[in-house]
Structure formats: C-alpha cells, structure tokens
Amino acid sequence: MKKGIITTLLLATVSISLTSFDYAPRYTKVAVTGLPLPTNTEIISGLKQALEQGTTKSSDQLSALNGYFGNAAIKVLMPPEAQKAEKTLRKLGLNKLCDDVVLSLNRAAEDAAKKAKPIFIDAVKQMTVQDAANILTGSQDAATQYFKRTTTAALTTQFKPVVHTSLGNVGATNLYTQLANQYNKIPLTFNKVNPNLDDYVTQKAIDGLFYEIALEELNIRQNLSARTTPLLQKVFGVLDKK
Image (spheres, rainbow, N blue to C red):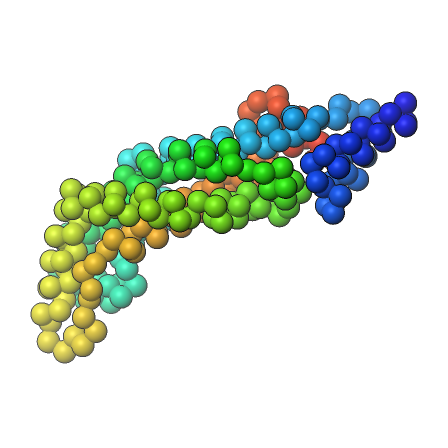
C-alpha cells in the first residue's frame, strides 16, 4: 500500500514538472494520512477553475455601476499633475466641475472592464503545466502575477479605445478640458495641466482590475467558503495540509 502511494506521488510529481517545488512533500503528507489525492487532471482543472472564477468575479464587479467609483481602494482620482489644480479649483468654488470629472473617469474605467473577461479566460486556456505548477505552489499572488505578465498588453490594447470612446460619451474629455482651461487661466500657474486622459485612465483601470484579482486569489487560497465547487475544495484543501 505504502509503495503504491509513493509511486502515485512520483508520477504526479514528474508529470506536472514539480520536482523543484515544495509540492510533493505536501501531497505525501496528505496521502499518508489517508485523505484522497487529487489526480493530475484534477489539479490542473481545479486551478483553472479557480482562476476563471476569480477573474470573472473581479471583471463583473468592476464593470458594474460604481465598480470603480464606489471602491475607495481603486477609485480613479485626478491625474497626479491635475491634483494641485483640483485643490485650487475647489477653493474657488468649482466643486461640481471637479466631482463630475472624477465620476466620469470612473465611468470610463467601468466601461473598459467589460472587455477583461475574455482576455483572462484566454490566458487560462493558454496556461502551461509549468505555469500551473508555479501558481499552485508559488506565492499568495502567483496567479495575479501570471495574469499581469500574460494579459497586460492585451488589456491595454482592448481598454484604450473603450476608454477613449467612453470618456467622450460621458463627457469626461470636455469636463477635464474645462478643468484644465480654468486652471491654466489662473495667473502664475506655471505647471499647466495636460488634458489628455486616455493613457492615464487605461492604466488605472488595469491597476484596479489586478488589485481585485489579487484579493480574490488570496480569498480562494485562504478561505474555505470561497472554494465553491467540490474540485476547488479538493485541490486547494490538499495544499492546506502543510
């Protein structure tokens, strides 16, 4: 019996390229205690299921109304170079203009987030066995780092035109231009505000998305109730037995 367990572990370890990771010892401990050992297929499928669940949840949350605007951690604020202008304009009583600009920036980010889900799903499909091994046995944000590495370029390409269109549709471009012009007309303002917003909002939208994905990844790794299917419970439950 013991020999059979060891053979199973060796096959699992070799076939998913984990000889250099602290993976087999964790599974050995579980196997010896008599708990069921996930198969190779279950391990990979479980991980992909977790990643699709996490990215889908994050994308859906952020693309909803107030997904960015209502989340203080990722809310899109004025560009750094415009924040001094914002303070000055608020002192002059132009609070509504400033508030409208901030709201419109977040609406553009929320529109862009609708493009994220298929990009992440494609990244999951393209994942190699070695990628899966690195994620499963890696740091608490290993999956998030994988997505940053494999999807940032595609997200930027997909988000930017949506942001550009949305900024126009929600009036952000005009509002921000008004804000910039109002500030630039103030005497002795030497650091003029650049009214180009596309790159800034695109990057902030992507940053916010990865922030939420990292939270969801940590939740699945640490919280039993976040593992919403038997397969997730089996795969990640085994890794809990360190």
